[in-house]
Image (cartoon, rainbow over all chains, first blue to last red):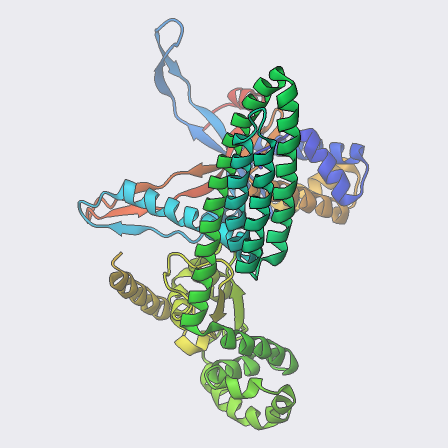
Length: 423
Length: 96
Protein backbone atom coordinates (compact mmCIF):
# COMPACT_ATOMS: atom_id res chain seq x y z
CA UNK A 1 0.00 0.00 0.00
CA UNK A 2 1.08 3.50 -0.90
CA UNK A 3 4.46 2.62 -2.25
CA UNK A 4 6.00 4.71 -4.89
CA UNK A 5 7.17 2.63 -7.81
CA UNK A 6 9.96 3.88 -9.99
CA UNK A 7 10.67 3.05 -13.59
CA UNK A 8 13.07 0.37 -12.39
CA UNK A 9 10.34 -1.38 -10.36
CA UNK A 10 8.12 -1.25 -13.40
CA UNK A 11 10.84 -2.81 -15.53
CA UNK A 12 11.30 -5.65 -13.01
CA UNK A 13 7.57 -6.32 -12.81
CA UNK A 14 7.15 -6.27 -16.56
CA UNK A 15 10.10 -8.59 -17.16
CA UNK A 16 8.74 -11.01 -14.59
CA UNK A 17 5.21 -10.94 -15.92
CA UNK A 18 6.10 -11.37 -19.57
CA UNK A 19 9.06 -13.65 -19.02
CA UNK A 20 11.36 -11.40 -21.01
CA UNK A 21 14.82 -10.10 -20.23
CA UNK A 22 15.02 -6.99 -18.08
CA UNK A 23 16.95 -5.28 -20.80
CA UNK A 24 14.14 -5.83 -23.25
CA UNK A 25 11.58 -4.60 -20.78
CA UNK A 26 13.68 -1.52 -20.18
CA UNK A 27 14.10 -0.71 -23.87
CA UNK A 28 10.40 -1.24 -24.37
CA UNK A 29 9.39 1.13 -21.58
CA UNK A 30 11.92 3.75 -22.59
CA UNK A 31 10.78 3.59 -26.18
CA UNK A 32 7.18 3.77 -25.08
CA UNK A 33 7.84 6.92 -23.14
CA UNK A 34 9.93 8.36 -25.96
CA UNK A 35 7.20 7.68 -28.51
CA UNK A 36 4.54 9.22 -26.29
CA UNK A 37 6.69 12.29 -25.64
CA UNK A 38 7.48 12.74 -29.30
CA UNK A 39 3.89 12.40 -30.33
CA UNK A 40 2.82 14.82 -27.64
CA UNK A 41 5.40 17.34 -28.70
CA UNK A 42 4.02 17.26 -32.19
CA UNK A 43 0.61 18.19 -30.74
CA UNK A 44 -0.79 14.73 -31.28
CA UNK A 45 -2.74 13.23 -28.39
CA UNK A 46 -1.85 9.62 -27.55
CA UNK A 47 -4.52 7.13 -26.65
CA UNK A 48 -3.59 3.92 -24.89
CA UNK A 49 -6.19 1.21 -24.61
CA UNK A 50 -7.55 0.60 -21.07
CA UNK A 51 -5.26 3.31 -19.76
CA UNK A 52 -6.18 6.73 -20.99
CA UNK A 53 -5.34 9.66 -23.21
CA UNK A 54 -2.31 11.91 -22.98
CA UNK A 55 -2.89 15.28 -24.52
CA UNK A 56 -1.76 18.84 -24.49
CA UNK A 57 -3.80 21.51 -22.84
CA UNK A 58 -3.16 25.15 -23.54
CA UNK A 59 -2.59 27.39 -20.56
CA UNK A 60 -3.29 31.01 -21.33
CA UNK A 61 -0.89 33.77 -20.42
CA UNK A 62 -1.48 35.21 -17.02
CA UNK A 63 0.02 37.77 -14.71
CA UNK A 64 1.88 36.75 -11.65
CA UNK A 65 4.43 38.04 -9.16
CA UNK A 66 8.04 36.97 -9.03
CA UNK A 67 8.46 35.10 -5.79
CA UNK A 68 11.92 36.45 -5.12
CA UNK A 69 11.79 40.04 -6.31
CA UNK A 70 8.11 40.80 -5.92
CA UNK A 71 7.98 42.22 -9.44
CA UNK A 72 4.92 41.73 -11.55
CA UNK A 73 5.69 39.35 -14.37
CA UNK A 74 3.68 37.71 -17.06
CA UNK A 75 3.74 33.97 -17.47
CA UNK A 76 3.50 33.38 -21.20
CA UNK A 77 0.92 31.08 -22.68
CA UNK A 78 2.18 27.50 -22.77
CA UNK A 79 1.07 23.91 -23.01
CA UNK A 80 0.62 21.46 -20.22
CA UNK A 81 0.62 17.71 -20.53
CA UNK A 82 -2.60 16.32 -19.15
CA UNK A 83 -3.72 12.76 -18.74
CA UNK A 84 -7.31 11.61 -18.90
CA UNK A 85 -7.69 8.13 -17.44
CA UNK A 86 -9.87 5.63 -19.23
CA UNK A 87 -13.33 5.14 -17.78
CA UNK A 88 -12.63 1.55 -16.77
CA UNK A 89 -9.44 2.60 -14.95
CA UNK A 90 -11.26 5.43 -13.21
CA UNK A 91 -13.92 3.06 -11.96
CA UNK A 92 -11.40 0.45 -10.89
CA UNK A 93 -9.52 2.99 -8.82
CA UNK A 94 -12.68 4.33 -7.23
CA UNK A 95 -14.04 0.86 -6.50
CA UNK A 96 -13.75 1.12 -2.69
CA UNK A 97 -16.09 4.12 -2.80
CA UNK A 98 -18.25 3.02 -5.71
CA UNK A 99 -21.32 2.42 -3.58
CA UNK A 100 -21.59 6.00 -2.38
CA UNK A 101 -24.18 8.29 -3.85
CA UNK A 102 -24.89 11.97 -3.69
CA UNK A 103 -27.47 12.84 -1.10
CA UNK A 104 -29.72 15.86 -0.98
CA UNK A 105 -29.26 17.79 2.21
CA UNK A 106 -32.18 19.34 4.02
CA UNK A 107 -31.82 22.89 5.22
CA UNK A 108 -30.05 23.36 8.49
CA UNK A 109 -28.71 19.83 8.77
CA UNK A 110 -25.40 19.72 10.56
CA UNK A 111 -24.11 17.49 7.81
CA UNK A 112 -20.38 17.33 8.42
CA UNK A 113 -20.52 15.90 11.90
CA UNK A 114 -23.41 13.58 11.28
CA UNK A 115 -21.87 12.04 8.21
CA UNK A 116 -18.45 11.44 9.62
CA UNK A 117 -19.80 10.12 12.91
CA UNK A 118 -22.14 7.59 11.43
CA UNK A 119 -19.44 6.30 9.17
CA UNK A 120 -16.99 5.86 11.99
CA UNK A 121 -19.64 4.13 14.04
CA UNK A 122 -20.26 1.59 11.36
CA UNK A 123 -16.61 0.86 10.98
CA UNK A 124 -16.08 0.51 14.69
CA UNK A 125 -19.05 -1.72 15.08
CA UNK A 126 -17.83 -3.89 12.29
CA UNK A 127 -14.54 -4.33 14.02
CA UNK A 128 -16.28 -5.05 17.29
CA UNK A 129 -18.33 -7.77 15.78
CA UNK A 130 -15.30 -9.40 14.20
CA UNK A 131 -13.60 -9.38 17.57
CA UNK A 132 -16.49 -10.86 19.42
CA UNK A 133 -17.13 -13.52 16.85
CA UNK A 134 -13.58 -14.76 16.74
CA UNK A 135 -13.18 -14.72 20.49
CA UNK A 136 -16.59 -16.09 21.19
CA UNK A 137 -15.98 -19.32 19.32
CA UNK A 138 -12.94 -20.21 21.30
CA UNK A 139 -13.65 -18.91 24.71
CA UNK A 140 -17.32 -19.03 25.53
CA UNK A 141 -17.33 -22.62 26.60
CA UNK A 142 -14.52 -22.19 29.01
CA UNK A 143 -14.93 -18.62 29.93
CA UNK A 144 -16.86 -18.98 33.15
CA UNK A 145 -14.56 -21.55 34.68
CA UNK A 146 -11.18 -19.94 34.12
CA UNK A 147 -12.52 -16.61 35.20
CA UNK A 148 -13.70 -17.88 38.57
CA UNK A 149 -10.68 -20.00 39.20
CA UNK A 150 -8.48 -17.11 38.18
CA UNK A 151 -9.99 -15.02 40.91
CA UNK A 152 -9.37 -17.77 43.38
CA UNK A 153 -5.81 -18.24 42.29
CA UNK A 154 -5.17 -14.58 42.62
CA UNK A 155 -6.62 -14.64 46.12
CA UNK A 156 -4.48 -17.61 46.93
CA UNK A 157 -1.45 -15.87 45.55
CA UNK A 158 -2.09 -12.82 47.63
CA UNK A 159 -2.55 -14.82 50.74
CA UNK A 160 0.63 -16.71 50.04
CA UNK A 161 2.50 -13.52 49.41
CA UNK A 162 1.23 -11.77 52.48
CA UNK A 163 2.38 -14.66 54.59
CA UNK A 164 5.84 -14.54 53.15
CA UNK A 165 7.11 -12.55 56.12
CA UNK A 166 10.16 -14.37 57.45
CA UNK A 167 9.02 -16.97 59.97
CA UNK A 168 5.53 -18.08 58.97
CA UNK A 169 5.98 -21.02 56.67
CA UNK A 170 3.05 -22.89 58.07
CA UNK A 171 0.64 -20.26 56.94
CA UNK A 172 1.98 -20.50 53.45
CA UNK A 173 1.31 -24.20 53.58
CA UNK A 174 -2.22 -23.56 54.69
CA UNK A 175 -2.49 -21.25 51.72
CA UNK A 176 -1.64 -24.14 49.46
CA UNK A 177 -4.30 -26.28 50.98
CA UNK A 178 -6.75 -23.41 50.71
CA UNK A 179 -5.92 -22.94 47.08
CA UNK A 180 -6.31 -26.63 46.50
CA UNK A 181 -9.65 -26.75 48.17
CA UNK A 182 -10.89 -23.78 46.29
CA UNK A 183 -9.72 -25.19 43.04
CA UNK A 184 -11.50 -28.40 43.82
CA UNK A 185 -14.67 -26.55 44.57
CA UNK A 186 -14.28 -24.81 41.26
CA UNK A 187 -13.96 -28.00 39.41
CA UNK A 188 -17.11 -29.27 41.01
CA UNK A 189 -19.02 -26.11 40.37
CA UNK A 190 -17.97 -25.69 36.82
CA UNK A 191 -18.38 -29.05 35.26
CA UNK A 192 -18.12 -27.71 31.72
CA UNK A 193 -14.70 -26.25 32.37
CA UNK A 194 -13.22 -29.21 34.20
CA UNK A 195 -10.00 -29.40 32.26
CA UNK A 196 -9.32 -25.76 32.63
CA UNK A 197 -9.93 -25.61 36.34
CA UNK A 198 -7.72 -28.62 36.76
CA UNK A 199 -4.96 -26.86 35.00
CA UNK A 200 -5.62 -23.88 37.22
CA UNK A 201 -5.46 -26.13 40.21
CA UNK A 202 -2.05 -27.35 39.22
CA UNK A 203 -0.98 -23.83 38.68
CA UNK A 204 -2.15 -22.69 42.06
CA UNK A 205 -0.19 -25.50 43.66
CA UNK A 206 2.92 -24.59 41.75
CA UNK A 207 2.48 -20.92 42.53
CA UNK A 208 2.01 -21.66 46.19
CA UNK A 209 5.07 -23.89 46.12
CA UNK A 210 7.02 -21.04 44.62
CA UNK A 211 5.76 -18.88 47.44
CA UNK A 212 7.08 -21.36 50.00
CA UNK A 213 10.52 -21.47 48.49
CA UNK A 214 10.52 -17.73 48.46
CA UNK A 215 9.51 -17.50 52.13
CA UNK A 216 12.31 -19.79 53.14
CA UNK A 217 14.84 -17.80 51.18
CA UNK A 218 13.39 -14.62 52.62
CA UNK A 219 13.88 -15.84 56.17
CA UNK A 220 17.57 -16.41 55.49
CA UNK A 221 18.36 -13.35 53.44
CA UNK A 222 17.14 -9.81 54.16
CA UNK A 223 18.36 -8.37 50.89
CA UNK A 224 16.44 -10.87 48.90
CA UNK A 225 13.40 -9.95 50.95
CA UNK A 226 13.57 -6.40 49.70
CA UNK A 227 14.01 -7.71 46.23
CA UNK A 228 11.06 -9.99 46.70
CA UNK A 229 8.97 -7.14 47.97
CA UNK A 230 9.65 -5.10 44.87
CA UNK A 231 8.97 -8.08 42.71
CA UNK A 232 5.75 -8.77 44.52
CA UNK A 233 4.35 -5.31 44.06
CA UNK A 234 5.23 -5.51 40.39
CA UNK A 235 3.62 -8.86 40.19
CA UNK A 236 0.46 -7.71 41.88
CA UNK A 237 0.11 -4.90 39.45
CA UNK A 238 0.65 -7.30 36.62
CA UNK A 239 -1.94 -9.70 37.94
CA UNK A 240 -4.56 -7.04 38.47
CA UNK A 241 -3.95 -5.75 34.95
CA UNK A 242 -4.33 -9.24 33.55
CA UNK A 243 -7.52 -9.65 35.51
CA UNK A 244 -9.02 -6.48 34.08
CA UNK A 245 -8.13 -7.54 30.56
CA UNK A 246 -9.66 -10.94 31.16
CA UNK A 247 -12.87 -9.34 32.41
CA UNK A 248 -13.12 -7.20 29.29
CA UNK A 249 -12.53 -10.19 27.06
CA UNK A 250 -15.15 -12.14 28.92
CA UNK A 251 -17.68 -9.36 28.53
CA UNK A 252 -16.99 -9.22 24.81
CA UNK A 253 -17.26 -12.94 24.40
CA UNK A 254 -20.47 -13.29 26.35
CA UNK A 255 -21.99 -10.37 24.48
CA UNK A 256 -21.02 -11.89 21.15
CA UNK A 257 -22.26 -15.31 22.12
CA UNK A 258 -25.66 -14.17 23.22
CA UNK A 259 -26.03 -11.84 20.29
CA UNK A 260 -25.59 -14.57 17.77
CA UNK A 261 -27.74 -17.02 19.60
CA UNK A 262 -30.49 -14.48 19.98
CA UNK A 263 -30.36 -13.59 16.31
CA UNK A 264 -30.46 -17.23 15.30
CA UNK A 265 -33.36 -17.85 17.66
CA UNK A 266 -35.38 -14.87 16.51
CA UNK A 267 -35.03 -15.45 12.82
CA UNK A 268 -35.05 -19.19 12.66
CA UNK A 269 -32.27 -18.80 10.13
CA UNK A 270 -30.56 -22.23 10.28
CA UNK A 271 -33.25 -24.21 8.46
CA UNK A 272 -33.35 -21.61 5.69
CA UNK A 273 -29.60 -21.96 5.32
CA UNK A 274 -29.83 -25.65 4.83
CA UNK A 275 -32.44 -25.28 2.19
CA UNK A 276 -30.24 -22.78 0.43
CA UNK A 277 -27.41 -25.22 0.23
CA UNK A 278 -29.63 -27.71 -1.42
CA UNK A 279 -30.82 -25.06 -3.79
CA UNK A 280 -27.29 -24.50 -4.98
CA UNK A 281 -26.79 -28.19 -5.64
CA UNK A 282 -30.03 -28.13 -7.45
CA UNK A 283 -28.81 -25.27 -9.58
CA UNK A 284 -25.85 -27.18 -10.81
CA UNK A 285 -27.84 -30.21 -11.75
CA UNK A 286 -30.34 -28.54 -13.96
CA UNK A 287 -28.93 -27.61 -17.35
CA UNK A 288 -30.73 -24.32 -17.91
CA UNK A 289 -29.63 -21.81 -15.36
CA UNK A 290 -32.52 -19.50 -15.72
CA UNK A 291 -34.95 -22.33 -15.30
CA UNK A 292 -33.47 -23.52 -12.09
CA UNK A 293 -33.30 -20.01 -10.88
CA UNK A 294 -36.96 -19.40 -11.39
CA UNK A 295 -37.69 -22.61 -9.69
CA UNK A 296 -35.57 -21.59 -6.77
CA UNK A 297 -37.29 -18.31 -6.30
CA UNK A 298 -40.69 -19.85 -6.43
CA UNK A 299 -39.78 -22.76 -4.26
CA UNK A 300 -37.91 -21.04 -1.53
CA UNK A 301 -40.95 -20.73 0.66
CA UNK A 302 -42.00 -24.30 0.27
CA UNK A 303 -38.55 -25.75 0.02
CA UNK A 304 -38.55 -27.38 3.41
CA UNK A 305 -40.27 -30.52 2.20
CA UNK A 306 -37.91 -30.87 -0.70
CA UNK A 307 -34.82 -30.55 1.34
CA UNK A 308 -35.62 -33.69 3.26
CA UNK A 309 -34.34 -36.03 0.63
CA UNK A 310 -32.38 -35.22 -2.47
CA UNK A 311 -33.29 -38.29 -4.52
CA UNK A 312 -36.87 -37.11 -4.51
CA UNK A 313 -35.77 -33.86 -5.96
CA UNK A 314 -34.30 -35.50 -8.96
CA UNK A 315 -37.43 -37.41 -9.66
CA UNK A 316 -39.36 -34.22 -9.22
CA UNK A 317 -37.31 -32.33 -11.70
CA UNK A 318 -39.12 -33.45 -14.85
CA UNK A 319 -42.43 -32.69 -13.23
CA UNK A 320 -41.33 -29.29 -12.17
CA UNK A 321 -40.13 -28.31 -15.60
CA UNK A 322 -43.49 -27.55 -17.18
CA UNK A 323 -44.22 -25.23 -14.31
CA UNK A 324 -40.98 -23.46 -14.93
CA UNK A 325 -41.84 -22.91 -18.51
CA UNK A 326 -44.63 -20.61 -17.46
CA UNK A 327 -42.38 -18.66 -15.23
CA UNK A 328 -39.82 -18.49 -17.95
CA UNK A 329 -42.24 -16.89 -20.32
CA UNK A 330 -43.06 -14.33 -17.74
CA UNK A 331 -39.42 -13.77 -16.99
CA UNK A 332 -38.16 -13.48 -20.52
CA UNK A 333 -38.96 -9.81 -21.02
CA UNK A 334 -36.67 -9.09 -18.10
CA UNK A 335 -33.31 -9.11 -19.74
CA UNK A 336 -31.01 -9.83 -16.85
CA UNK A 337 -32.73 -12.87 -15.47
CA UNK A 338 -29.73 -15.07 -16.22
CA UNK A 339 -28.00 -14.07 -13.00
CA UNK A 340 -28.18 -16.94 -10.58
CA UNK A 341 -29.93 -16.80 -7.31
CA UNK A 342 -27.14 -17.00 -4.82
CA UNK A 343 -26.33 -16.68 -1.18
CA UNK A 344 -23.84 -14.18 0.05
CA UNK A 345 -22.02 -14.35 3.34
CA UNK A 346 -21.31 -10.95 4.77
CA UNK A 347 -17.63 -10.23 5.02
CA UNK A 348 -15.74 -7.21 6.20
CA UNK A 349 -16.15 -4.39 3.68
CA UNK A 350 -19.43 -5.66 2.31
CA UNK A 351 -22.37 -3.34 2.05
CA UNK A 352 -25.83 -4.02 0.75
CA UNK A 353 -25.20 -1.46 -1.94
CA UNK A 354 -22.01 -3.21 -2.99
CA UNK A 355 -23.75 -6.54 -3.17
CA UNK A 356 -26.61 -5.09 -5.17
CA UNK A 357 -24.15 -3.47 -7.56
CA UNK A 358 -22.40 -6.79 -8.00
CA UNK A 359 -25.48 -8.88 -8.63
CA UNK A 360 -27.91 -6.51 -10.27
CA UNK A 361 -25.71 -3.83 -11.77
CA UNK A 362 -27.26 -1.00 -9.81
CA UNK A 363 -26.80 -0.09 -6.19
CA UNK A 364 -30.36 1.08 -5.57
CA UNK A 365 -31.60 -2.48 -5.76
CA UNK A 366 -30.18 -3.18 -2.33
CA UNK A 367 -33.67 -2.54 -0.96
CA UNK A 368 -34.83 -5.83 -2.45
CA UNK A 369 -31.99 -7.77 -0.89
CA UNK A 370 -32.93 -6.11 2.36
CA UNK A 371 -36.58 -7.05 1.98
CA UNK A 372 -35.73 -10.62 1.09
CA UNK A 373 -33.63 -10.93 4.23
CA UNK A 374 -35.60 -8.73 6.57
CA UNK A 375 -35.75 -11.40 9.21
CA UNK A 376 -31.97 -11.75 9.26
CA UNK A 377 -31.09 -8.09 9.02
CA UNK A 378 -32.01 -6.19 12.11
CA UNK A 379 -30.31 -2.99 11.13
CA UNK A 380 -29.73 -2.34 7.45
CA UNK A 381 -26.79 -0.11 8.30
CA UNK A 382 -25.00 -2.69 10.37
CA UNK A 383 -25.21 -6.36 9.53
CA UNK A 384 -23.26 -8.84 11.59
CA UNK A 385 -20.33 -10.49 9.87
CA UNK A 386 -21.05 -14.01 8.69
CA UNK A 387 -24.72 -13.32 8.11
CA UNK A 388 -25.98 -15.29 5.14
CA UNK A 389 -28.13 -13.34 2.73
CA UNK A 390 -30.32 -14.67 -0.02
CA UNK A 391 -29.95 -12.77 -3.25
CA UNK A 392 -33.40 -12.91 -4.84
CA UNK A 393 -33.82 -13.57 -8.53
CA UNK A 394 -34.06 -10.28 -10.43
CA UNK A 395 -37.50 -11.09 -11.80
CA UNK A 396 -38.99 -11.59 -8.36
CA UNK A 397 -39.01 -7.85 -7.74
CA UNK A 398 -38.85 -6.74 -11.34
CA UNK A 399 -35.21 -5.77 -11.08
CA UNK A 400 -33.80 -4.43 -14.31
CA UNK A 401 -30.81 -2.07 -14.24
CA UNK A 402 -31.47 -1.04 -17.84
CA UNK A 403 -34.98 0.08 -17.13
CA UNK A 404 -35.10 3.57 -15.60
CA UNK A 405 -38.59 2.93 -14.25
CA UNK A 406 -37.35 -0.08 -12.31
CA UNK A 407 -34.50 1.93 -10.80
CA UNK A 408 -36.89 4.74 -9.99
CA UNK A 409 -39.14 2.30 -8.20
CA UNK A 410 -36.24 0.98 -6.19
CA UNK A 411 -35.25 4.50 -5.28
CA UNK A 412 -38.72 5.32 -4.06
CA UNK A 413 -38.69 2.22 -1.93
CA UNK A 414 -35.32 3.26 -0.64
CA UNK A 415 -36.64 6.68 0.34
CA UNK A 416 -39.60 5.07 2.08
CA UNK A 417 -37.32 2.73 3.97
CA UNK A 418 -35.13 5.57 5.11
CA UNK A 419 -38.19 7.38 6.38
CA UNK A 420 -39.28 4.33 8.33
CA UNK A 421 -35.88 3.97 9.85
CA UNK A 422 -35.86 7.66 10.69
CA UNK A 423 -32.81 8.57 8.68
CA UNK B 1 -2.27 8.86 -32.20
CA UNK B 2 -4.50 5.89 -31.57
CA UNK B 3 -3.57 2.73 -29.76
CA UNK B 4 -2.93 0.99 -33.06
CA UNK B 5 -0.65 3.71 -34.34
CA UNK B 6 1.25 3.70 -31.10
CA UNK B 7 1.81 -0.04 -31.36
CA UNK B 8 2.89 0.27 -34.97
CA UNK B 9 5.39 3.01 -34.14
CA UNK B 10 6.76 1.03 -31.18
CA UNK B 11 7.06 -2.17 -33.16
CA UNK B 12 8.96 -0.37 -35.88
CA UNK B 13 11.34 1.21 -33.42
CA UNK B 14 11.97 -1.98 -31.46
CA UNK B 15 12.01 -4.32 -34.41
CA UNK B 16 9.37 -6.50 -32.77
CA UNK B 17 6.25 -7.91 -34.29
CA UNK B 18 3.03 -6.03 -33.73
CA UNK B 19 1.55 -8.92 -31.80
CA UNK B 20 4.53 -9.01 -29.46
CA UNK B 21 4.37 -5.28 -28.93
CA UNK B 22 0.65 -5.41 -28.24
CA UNK B 23 1.13 -8.09 -25.62
CA UNK B 24 3.89 -6.26 -23.81
CA UNK B 25 1.99 -3.00 -23.93
CA UNK B 26 -1.09 -4.63 -22.47
CA UNK B 27 0.99 -6.23 -19.74
CA UNK B 28 2.51 -2.85 -18.92
CA UNK B 29 -0.87 -1.20 -18.73
CA UNK B 30 -2.26 -3.95 -16.52
CA UNK B 31 0.71 -3.73 -14.16
CA UNK B 32 0.31 0.02 -13.87
CA UNK B 33 -3.45 -0.24 -13.42
CA UNK B 34 -3.31 -2.89 -10.73
CA UNK B 35 -0.69 -0.95 -8.82
CA UNK B 36 -2.76 2.21 -9.01
CA UNK B 37 -5.79 0.31 -7.79
CA UNK B 38 -3.78 -0.80 -4.78
CA UNK B 39 -3.04 2.80 -3.99
CA UNK B 40 0.57 2.74 -5.13
CA UNK B 41 1.91 5.61 -7.14
CA UNK B 42 4.13 5.27 -10.17
CA UNK B 43 6.89 7.73 -10.82
CA UNK B 44 8.56 7.70 -14.18
CA UNK B 45 11.60 9.92 -14.09
CA UNK B 46 11.38 12.68 -16.63
CA UNK B 47 7.86 11.83 -17.68
CA UNK B 48 5.56 12.17 -14.75
CA UNK B 49 3.93 10.73 -11.68
CA UNK B 50 0.71 8.75 -11.60
CA UNK B 51 -1.00 8.55 -8.28
CA UNK B 52 -4.38 7.68 -6.82
CA UNK B 53 -5.66 10.52 -4.70
CA UNK B 54 -8.51 10.47 -2.27
CA UNK B 55 -10.86 13.40 -2.61
CA UNK B 56 -12.91 14.10 0.46
CA UNK B 57 -16.65 14.44 0.58
CA UNK B 58 -17.94 17.90 -0.16
CA UNK B 59 -21.11 19.88 -0.39
CA UNK B 60 -22.13 21.17 -3.76
CA UNK B 61 -24.94 23.58 -4.36
CA UNK B 62 -27.06 23.56 -7.44
CA UNK B 63 -26.94 27.22 -8.48
CA UNK B 64 -30.41 27.14 -10.00
CA UNK B 65 -32.48 25.27 -7.42
CA UNK B 66 -30.20 26.10 -4.46
CA UNK B 67 -30.39 22.48 -3.44
CA UNK B 68 -27.45 21.27 -1.45
CA UNK B 69 -25.92 17.92 -2.23
CA UNK B 70 -23.50 15.94 -0.17
CA UNK B 71 -21.11 14.55 -2.73
CA UNK B 72 -19.42 11.38 -1.52
CA UNK B 73 -15.66 10.98 -1.31
CA UNK B 74 -13.88 9.37 -4.21
CA UNK B 75 -10.49 8.20 -5.30
CA UNK B 76 -9.27 9.62 -8.53
CA UNK B 77 -6.16 9.22 -10.62
CA UNK B 78 -3.91 12.22 -10.84
CA UNK B 79 -1.04 12.73 -13.24
CA UNK B 80 1.69 15.27 -12.60
CA UNK B 81 4.00 15.83 -15.54
CA UNK B 82 7.70 15.64 -14.80
CA UNK B 83 10.23 18.41 -15.14
CA UNK B 84 11.85 17.21 -18.36
CA UNK B 85 8.62 17.06 -20.26
CA UNK B 86 7.54 20.41 -18.84
CA UNK B 87 10.74 22.00 -20.07
CA UNK B 88 10.33 20.43 -23.48
CA UNK B 89 6.81 21.73 -23.71
CA UNK B 90 7.91 25.23 -22.74
CA UNK B 91 9.93 25.41 -25.91
CA UNK B 92 6.94 24.51 -28.02
CA UNK B 93 5.49 27.30 -30.03
CA UNK B 94 2.04 28.29 -29.08
CA UNK B 95 -0.10 28.41 -32.16
CA UNK B 96 -3.76 29.28 -32.66
